[in-house]
Each structure stands twice: as C-alpha cells, then as structure tokens.
Length: 419
Length: 147
Image (cartoon, rainbow over all chains, first blue to last red; front, side, top):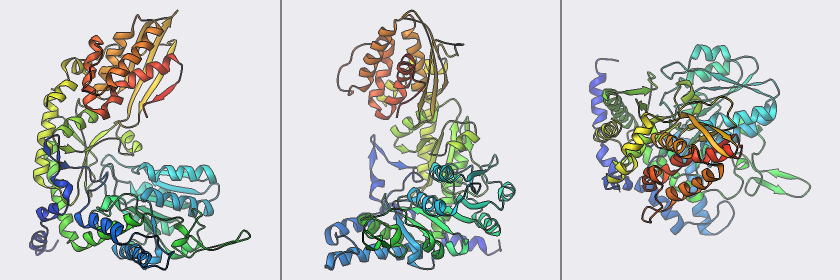
C-alpha cells in the first residue's frame, strides 16, 4: 500500500451510504416475532430492492408476452427486456459479447448444463475432473453423475484448517488426464475467496477447461471473466438481489458452439422436420422452452442496481462489518469460528460450545435474527471440521454493525437458555 | 419469549445435557439409523425385543436439544412396553406434536414437555426423528429419514 492509500480508501467509503441502501429494500423494515428483522442470511438468498420488484411488476403489467415468437408490440417489449438483461449480464462480468451468455434457472442449472453437454460429449473413461473440498453440493453431485456416466474419475483438492485450498496439492492433482476443473470463486459455507486466477492458469497449462461457480462471488466482488480467463462462469440472480429462478452461464464462444444442446424444445431450434432438426445458434441452442421472462426482467434491474453503486465502497463496507462480526463473535464464551481464511467475504460460520446450531437458530429467530443453521449444502466441509452443522451469519451490502450487535446480544440469550 | 421457555423447558434441557439410555446395545434384535438432512442430525437406535416386549432400548448420535431430549424421553417411555403399545404411543405422540397449538391435546405425561414444539413448525421433525426411527427399527428398515 502506498502512503496515500488510507485517505483514498476513506474518501471512497464516504460514497457508500448504508442507510440509503437499506431504504431501497422494503423487506428490511419488516418485523418478525415483534422484533425488527435482522437479515443475516444473504448467502442463502439475498433480499430484493424496490427497483427489482418494480421491474417485475412493470413487465407483467406492460410487457407480458412470449419472447422471440410474435410480431406484436408486447412480444417486442418482452424480447427487449429479456435480451437487454443478457447484454447487461455480459457487461456485468465483462464477457466479450452477449452471445456468450446463456440464461439459465440458476447456478445449479448452469453447472448441470456444462456437465451434461460439455462433459458428456468430451469426457472419456479414465479422464479426470478436479473439484475442491469446499464445494457446494451443486458443484459436486453433477460431476459425480458425469463420472458415473462416462467412467471419468473425480479428484478432490483438500483444504487446510483455515479453510483455504492447498494450491500445491491442487497442482499435484492435475495430470495429463485432467479435462475439467470446477471450483467455487467464494465458498458458501466458509466465505473463503479462492485463488481462482492461479487455479485457472495452472489448469490451462495442463490443457483442462475450468468452470468457476460464482454464486457467492457476484454479490460481493467485481467479476471480470476475461481477466480471470475462465472457460465457464456460472452464477444466480437471487444471490445478487435479483429474483429466484434465473441465472447465467458464461461460456467461451468456441466451447459453446461445439457443445451439443442440453434440452430439446421450442426456441432452441432453427428448423424441425421429422427427418432432421437444425439447432438454433448460441446461446439460444441452450434455452429450450419459455423462460422465466419476468424474472429475467428483474435480474436486469438487479444488475443495473449493482452497477449503479460504488462497488469498491460497498465491498469495503461489507468487509468492515464482517471484520467487526468476527471480532464480536470471537469474544463470546465458547464460540469457535469455522473457516478463518486470509481472504474471505460475506460469511461468518461458527459454533457455540454445548449448543446445537439448530437450537441457536430457533432462539435467534425469536430475537428477529435470521441466520442459516445446518450443513449449508456442503456436507464435506462439515465433515472436514468434524462437525454436523454450523451457525452461519452471512452478509449483504445492506447489513450494519448495529445488526451485528443485535446478533451478539441474541447469542448471549442463547447462552442463557443453555447455561 | 414464553413460547421459547415452553420449548426449552428444564426437563428438555436436562435430557439434552444428560440423555438417558445414551449407549449402544451389542447385537440388538432391532436397529435403525435416523437422519434429518435439514440439520444433519443422525441417530442410531438399538432395540431389544424379547417375545413381544421391548426389554431394552438405547440410542447414540448427534443432534439438537429437541431431538436428543425426545430420543431420551422416548427410550424411557417405551422400555417395558409391548411392540404394539410402542407403536400406539408413536401415533399418540405424533398426534400431539402435529396438532395446531390452539387445540387441546392428550396428556402424555413426561412426553408432553415436547408439545411446546407445536409453536415451532420447523422443529417438529426434530421431536419426531427418534420416534420415526423407532418405528423403522421395529419394521426393520435400516435408514430412515424425516424428509
């Protein structure tokens, strides 16, 4: 850091007004069990700003029609919103063009698409797929299914006690048979930011393609798929303040062109006869059936919302809240933090000695505090630490230090009940 | 806060801290494993049936206070009962924890401390895991799930 950095950072911070952001999210003024809602479950799903709610409402009121199919004005509006969101998604992750953006149902859908289309057509028995110990079940099971179908072998990169991927062991796992590496950008269970650039570089040196699961990264980090040089990048709208049921698969054009369709149906074809069907061009080849158009309209608004805020300032704010939360929870008697990677974002996973996370979750809920308790769809991570579940407080741009204080007081209440 | 104290009554906290019959039975006549994927709770239930009487019952596993206390209370309740009585008690218990909180329910003695779970719909599975596992053990299903 240069000597001028602190003042520069301070001036950036003044451009982020968390109270103003909070006013954009109507649900944050909700009361639960008579208490103000303290929403610390954004890694599960984020809340939605008014602009996203309005975009979906406007779509159904003024534009509802099917896309790419009709000559009437409403269809033109719907298509414009849909394709507009695709272009926004491309800009959001700095993809070279909108044609490299496949709109999906979400991250899980995108991973399954790559596994079944790319993986099924390219992998042979004895080929290897590399994932990490940190992955969400959605970045494990599709690869297990693919391995079962093709005879390929799944290799798992271990993590250390801090919850960081061991890069040396990763390099050692790569072999001439490695065809595909699938890795999360940010861990949903622990918040670890993985060294994806290095992971991608090493995989490419071995001739393997790389899929990055960005579900937990996009709400926090500025993502540039060209700078990362990844082959596939998948994420969900609902983790980044958009609606559920919408997601993105970014793929390098030549890869997408070479891949067979994932599902057959309407809109993914150029022509159909009983003798021969010609598939539509990329990305439409992968978008069979009428999609979630209203959701995509909301997703477009969510991208606009994120791109309009100072994201560096937002991240600095979130990092400060996470640091504060980590310090405050550490002070609690019997608290044990799970996952202490040097680079983290958005997630604080922990245990309270003598209290099952599920019991803590119920008591926190009665205090108005929403957290997730359980295995976070990451059972191997839990097994790695020898626990069955954790309490996970996860942050969005709208969380404050005051909310962390409420969490800590509620955790003291948990201690009292289980004294 | 009163519903919270209904849920975490002293009896439940006590059975959570010092679960009864918390051990394995070597080669029991019946055994089943219960699993709640929502919270990762896992429970091994061992039942010894001689004739048609449950002469011993024990459990091991990890779980929340509700599931542990419920398993502990259940083992105390069914020991010495016939298989038919235990099955009937399962039905009565299940009815108590799934009846809406504003409606009266049968008094099941000690087991009634778990009636407080009715105020917490997501926790009903925690209270019933041990019972479902008992039912499965008596029917000889090896792995039961509350999902």
